Length: 325
Image 1: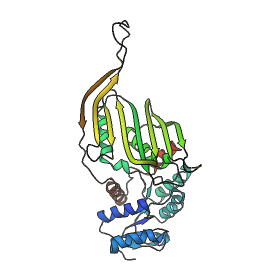
Image 2: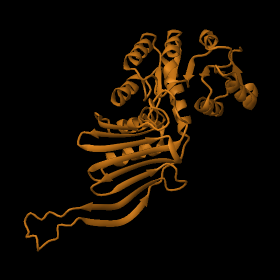
Image 3: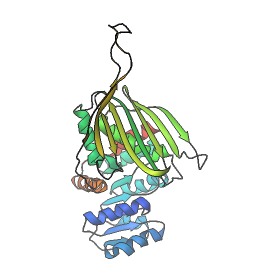
Image 4: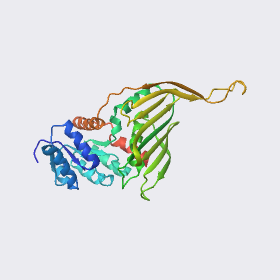
């Protein structure tokens, strides 16, 4: 291997190949890749030619002193074993979520990263999404009034996981979004699982949770014919809808709300006790589009260079695992 590379990607399957594709666009350095299925890495080599270097095994990557940052896009079942080695070799580590599903193992990785003065970052991509940042600003400015309910839908047809349930794979994204939006304690009240394809794997899940008095629902499915990514926030003044799959007008605020009039001072025949519905104008919120994965990978690179904790550091990831487990 030559000396003009600093980043390596271990695991070049579906998501790993997307990460490599993005890295190629943001760096002039060659990318070192490894996957136990050689055809995965070979496809990337065929596509990007001299920009890709294929390692024979991941130990070869660990021993290369020119590689400072490693991105791990493998299964949670092997992330701990490989991640521990990476940090022991004093490399900065980015791991696609969930890093692991065991809090004890994650605590060990966090401790090891701190001991070796290295960065450990989890791949919760929505923290780097401009729309989510805008929604946080809208909530902070109380534009919706007091928020009463949030519903998040994340549905698609595959990829279907063999090791973790839908609420861990898909729903953890939405837990991270809620954690980012409110920065308050999240508590799961109920978890409903539907095991369709396998007895031990949940393909469709619904999480009922609370953030203080705020009620939330997260619906996850990888058995849905259409891809859906929606966040509905109901406030006392207005409603917000973020539909990620919309080509235009992804983020809208509806000047609509419903309320029951206070009739305690009136006789029943003087004022109707039916709910009132108000329907005003709908506002399309402009948000500058950006490549969220590019933002995330740049953040990892920058924080590793500055040796500063990333937004989605080990402790952030640990909170999500504690909530979801």
